[in-house]
Amino acid sequence: MTRSGPQTTGAAPTAPGPTGTGTGPAHSGPAESGPHPRRILLLACAVTFLAFLDATVVNVAFPDLRRAFPDVSLARLTWVVSAYAVLFAALLAAAGRLADTLGRRALFLGSALAFTFTSLAASAAPTAELLILARALQGAAAAGMIPAALGLVLAHTPPARRAAALGAWGAAGGLAAAVGPSLGGLLVEVWDWRAIFLVNVPLGLAVCWAAARALPRDARTVRRLPDPLGTFALALGIAGVVTGLSQGEEWGWTDPAVIGLLAGGALSAATALHRSRRHPAPAVDRDLWRDPVFARANIGALLFGAGMYAWLLTGPSYLIARWDYSILEAGFGVTPGAVLATVGAWLVGRRVPARLQWAAVTLGSLLFAANALLLWGWADASTSYAQIFLPAGLLGGLGIGVVLTALSTAASAALPPQRFAAGTGLLMTARQLGGALGVAATAALLTGAGDHWRAVFLLVAVAALGAAAAGWSMRVRGAVKKGS
Image (cartoon, rainbow, N blue to C red; front, side, top):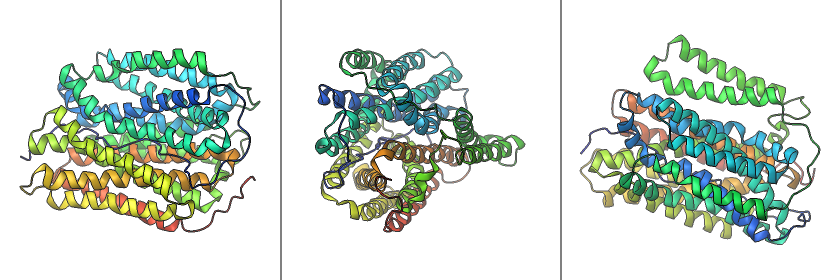
């Protein structure tokens, strides 16, 4: 059956992926003294799980949101997804620096509390506008949790165990992606969309209670806050571009408001980058881009993020529209790919040496492109789930796990240890920004005329092939000297 249905994001991981591997270079420098490094790792994994669960669990609830807010356009309702992604992307880099200024423990606790209460606000939102606002604030809180968690893991784990710890930290996001669709489908099927936000509240409070008891107080590094104007300009620029893309189909691409949003957003982001050239505490550390491997890894992350989020936005809705799946069935239908993504991430993290991460990025991107091309070629054929969607989803999931892990490993290996957190923040920013753009472009395609499904699958394939080209170009050696 080929009726169009509400569009939702799917179930592949949006997690950072392991940022260190057993075969990669160890990070130098002693760990800060502190008790119970395993407890710290567990807490870091917990907030990472929550942050990336909310990037996937909402996806399968999108059809229920459409029914709850029937008078809200699809383009506007996709901001329930995009608002989280935009604020998350815009604030990651600045949050990494903020952790050094305020202290990792303080940022961890403050962000976890904010995430918990914004989840409660989202669950109680009476209108779509208030739900979108709550999701934006939730994304901002998530942006604070992730770099604080990573900083705590690096600071309180002995150097010999950091690779394994980082692997576990990244795998937490993969686990969130694996259980997100089925958990979201179950919650929506038994209750409604509000339950997917309400479930964060007891979990978040438990994390805050445990963190207040277990996390040691670490010494603050005396630094200026990240450039407030540059940070605001960066966030405003990302929001402007994504808003323009989301509303272009509804308002018209030649509408002055759309043109103004796109042009103004680009100008605002350019202003943030320009200020970062000379500001003593820049919003974006431009020096990191001098390393060609790191720069190309970010390009790959941007392109792959766009294709990955476009695919995720389409998956469950395609199952609902094509085979009349229930929300719960659609959640379970996309779960096998997410599980295989975790397997792919583990294999790359344990088996692929740092010098071959470019090959893993290239191969994983090609697998992901093959997934999209399979669906593009047979989207309207009279085939079953097992014949077309399951094998395509397994290919896509494997590609996602391989690419996210390899990009993180290659980027971190190209940087000196003291810039690791800032570099990770930029890489995640690139991927989340690409994801927000992918969601916006997908919404435009799904609300336009023509064959919606095939158009989205072709978009995914093109983005994945671009990421494969970026991976191939990463064969060069980095220019930033280790320890510089």
